[in-house]
Length: 401
Image 1 (cartoon, rainbow, N blue to C red):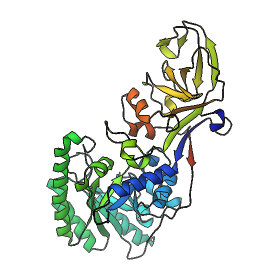
Image 2 (image 1 turned 30 degrees about the horizontal axis):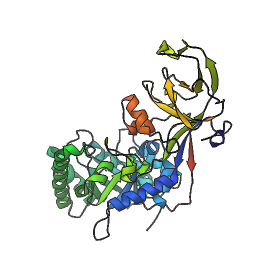
Image 3 (image 1 turned 60 degrees about the vertical axis):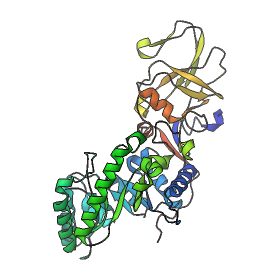
């Protein structure tokens, strides 16, 4: 990396997103789910939380261009933002509150995951739309019923499942909804040594899905597999998989790297040195003076901090600057942190810094480990003061037959 890699005028700090890597990862995941006869289940690209911090609209378009069949988000407002940007792939939203705008979702042809109270709330929204003339008399909500197969979060539990499905069948018969699918979420698929628990969830889900299809009287699109199950448990692939972390080129497994899975990390976190100065031995560094220089050296100031998503608790990690890696020293502050450039450093303000990314060879997992967390959290928490730069944007075709 050189100063030319990051313009100090245009970009003080940026998360660079390699859209070619996103497309590559979609292709890898498609091949991982291909069956011996050449067919494959559908692939949903999960772009919730602003595509795990990568920029939802750009990632959705890249995933669509690479052949993703559908999109997944947590909240309806995320789905509506995709629609407002012209993204037309089918999109599923599954986490709702009493303030969720179900009517807007129906009008925008957003598929809704429901698991309890929200079933009748969606039906009421359809009735309201028809009464206001906001939709035609044939308008209906497209639903996926969510089953709780053991995670204990969202989803209808087994003891309430028969009544829940029966109510969905009544609303479908009334022409208010169309139940397209049934789904659940795995809890320990990223821990291969707990395969028995994943199998138990799978068997429970298959029973609940079969009960729903029988009650409704028609086949349902079944989906259960997340990224770790997509990569390691073909028996969970069923009719569709939902891939989030793998889309961004990150591994969900503690002992398997992205490279070993054939995935390419899409995000690099880059900035520039804001200041460089020589200091004597005995110089305290940052709050609490948790680091004191042992000898004369040169310190560099990196203008990102915990307000930008760099965890305050990080200690003992490194960044890439001037063709080498240098240690982070002292406590991470709100807007900045300090690196030890060494006693003979020739670095200057404006020189490029990469915290993590393919160019530096520093994986985001190194920062996650230093913070005692996971790669999911590190990329997702990158804040709004950090620009998203999408590299290699290409025309897309979000809507396909």
